Image (cartoon, rainbow, N blue to C red; front, side, top):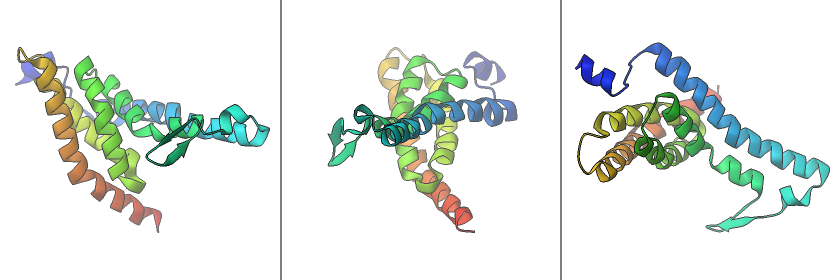
Length: 168
């Protein structure tokens, strides 16, 4: 088992998950939500129409450049975490979907939900990656499937707990 985990670059440690993954998550959050907020603020304060005008309407929701960046915070955090955990490409790209789901279902605890769900899904995806001749199907199916399951089961609970803490 130790050899398998080593070969798959699965290192179960506080440093790996508590420092490496969390630091990467912060970078993903900065490159999406915070930069989006900065762009919106600059556009509003300085009257820069390129930053305040609607550039897309998706599902009836209007988005500025900054709002689009902010809306991608879940996928940005998830891919940053997966990158820090040395996920292979098919796992990394599959986690875009997982990050969106866990952030959306996590509500007030979205970023924390992304962290926990993404760590689990990344390691499961890494475990199955390159183990079959149909890796291009198996790896995304397992990574996204496990991520959606963990998102459905864990993200709402994490969101509820975060909301409770926030209301204290």
